[in-house]
Length: 506
Image (cartoon, rainbow, N blue to C red; front, side, top):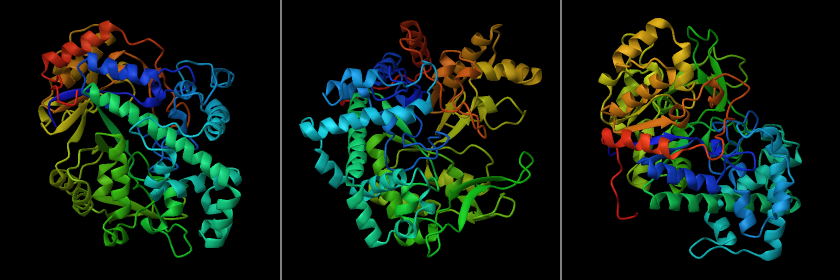
């Protein structure tokens, strides 16, 4: 990794006229903003299809894209959707918040209208792009199962696959054949949606490359229990012969949570996967590299060891620690895919085993400045950073730095001000001093959440871990990114040697 900087900005947080950030003109405008600001990276959150709670870390598939991110404007330009069909739907009335209820009720209506016209008009793929039929062939490893899963789930009013009738739950040949025939049109619709997502994403990614902007994608370690992956590939997880889960994941009890944390994601059967040369993971990572230039591995510690709890337990109290795949997985991935461009999300309790795996992998870890000043011996202060790492002011799980500065106690603020030499009286001035401190770090990569540049408060927080409401909603207002802001960010990149080098691809 070369010395550069980037901005953390979820796709759903982009401005757009249809209720949620998507792969529309505003995404291209943001890439342009990054280029003008001398930023070499755009870090996003996972882009998989979300379910209850709208968390991108609990997607219905580890391979599929989120239908909400498909640009309706692009479908209108292609002649697949009429302006009045999109404009006549309610996608929520608040330009600064995603209304997921409105999305759930109405986004599919627009996509179904586009699908109907697609069937009438035929495929009009651009030169150099896959046709619909070729796309389905190429992505068959996951797409056919995912489309069938979505169709059956809808037929069952959204019920988890664990509650489907046994023929479908166990994927018996006769039940599967009947479902494919019965739900053929819905299956084709789901494939069309993924085709359009992929098409639009690849166009944006290609454009970003011409602007010297690399995309950092976020890969959740675990999949949701109710997902196409756990249904179609039970051999990857800790399931019994009846395809029922035997172990789920979580965190052990600690001072903050006496009963631990019961996440409920299915645990991986790493021993079984090793015998298969981690083939499912090879497919998964290969798919992600089609979308991203760099992959951020969420919960990196879980590759070293993980906390497993017997399925059916009501708390995490009686779980135990199990070994993860360690370097065996990364060596298998490197053998099949070549050099791995990854960032390890190694926040939290560091053990010798975690640190050993990080060192052996060679992946850069993470430093978060908001964690640097809450104790006198924090590992996150600048003088303890190493070159092969990424520095942030905060992440999507932190409150924006403006709000953080108002919430910490007087002693912590005093320490922070002394350390970063901030004499700014205003909170906004202090936030920019924190940003400057991140840029000053020896860490190769510096990534700042957009909300910090804008000095946004807690209203712009992306996620409050453990909180059920108000997450994954914040959106940028249209035309909010000024040339003055771009010049200020560029000045930081120039001052601290983080301007991207021009490549022959530009």
